[in-house]
Amino acid sequence: MPNLLNFPSTSFLPLLALPILYWAFNFPRRQTKLTFYVHDYLTGEDASAVTVAGKDGHTTSILHFGTLLAVDDPVTQGPDPNSKEIGRAQGMYINSQLDGKGLHLVFSVIFTEGAYKGSTLEIQGADLFAMKEREFSVVSGTGYFRFVKGYGIMTTEMLDIPNLRAILKLDITVKHF
Image (tube, rainbow, N blue to C red; front, side, top):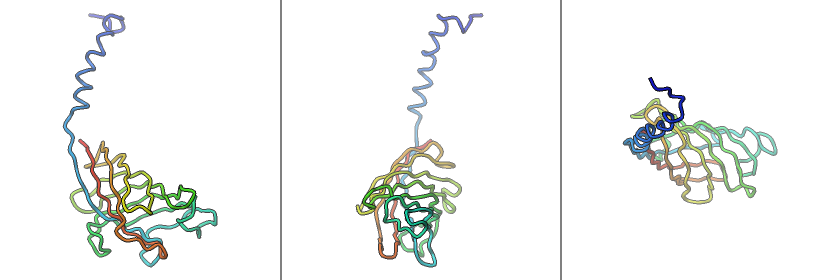
């Protein structure tokens, strides 16, 4: 029996790995496209976000650099606040731009209804909310979206800055097994 620790036989091991690597990188992946709406409200009886930290404590506006928010926003099928809720967007936003016009997002979209119930998508990226459209990363997922990679386009459907309320449309494209 050959000794696998012997140099001539171990030099053959990388050649055995090539078919496995080829299969791993060329294994058919599914592509899924999703559109849903996130209702981000910092005020009102239906508030779904709260300031956790900022230069003036919990009263600091998200429009100021360094402010951190915790969010548990409804995710719906349509832009109407009465549209069917299909999940929650839970995580945090931090105002990471010195002039206060940009956020960094880190949140999970947790699907609670529909075809993806029990699955999640992990979202991360910049949100320069003064822009009509901005792109973000989908970095991971669970359930139906296990091993996901992708991106999304966020569009502001409604923005009420004086009352700190927004409805965001997320168009997401992901590839997964």
